[in-house]
Image 1 (cartoon, rainbow, N blue to C red):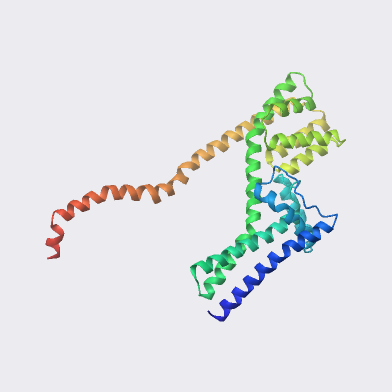
Image 2: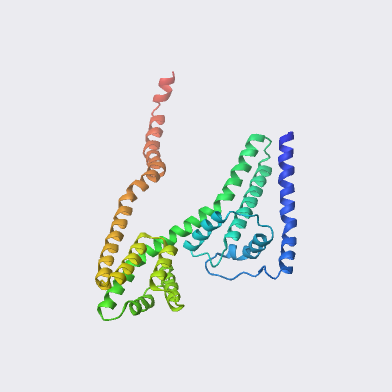
Length: 306
């Protein structure tokens, strides 16, 4: 074993031992500190794996977390808010999740090296470095995917809610009553949860304009931003909210149709690579194999070789 490989192996082993030995120490210190909560909140926004890890993440974030810039915490907090995870995962816990993911993927990379019995130092450094980078950025990739999926669900359900609001306000209900009835009619999902929070803000005494701005900040979708801005403008200028909602509903339906048309036009392009890479070679094999067999049976190959 080369000297560099020996140092890398010793560093990986020491890191694993330190991480394992810190787990009971973290839990012990967290149990003695009344300000640190060891029990998970049981939020449905987190998966089973994160629910199981959250007590450890919370303990690590409160006991061993390094000083982080407030700007970085604000960015993470805003992303967690838009992913509907801020009440389930704090920014410090997310940073602890990054560190844990980095340690796990680096350990997995070291396990691969031992299984393959590698002795080439550059390859070992490349594998460990690549796994470490992947482990560090994977929580951010997961968070961005969660935000994207949530936005897609809201954009899909929002035109239906606007149509309900228009119908109810034309039937004589005020805007607040139409929102309440619309929430009751739409299915469970992120859009319903966001408008429930909007109503909760209104009940706690927050002004409607501020509650709408909070809704727009949490969702960060152009359709919701336009909707909240139009409602605030209609209230300030005394305009008709019903006509504005009808215009908004028509525009959102058109945008939804255009998105569906765009995805339909992209489908043939996305299918081209699987067709070229998988279907066409098999088709060529099916056509060419009988021709090659007949050519070999005819004896022409032997004549040409002679």
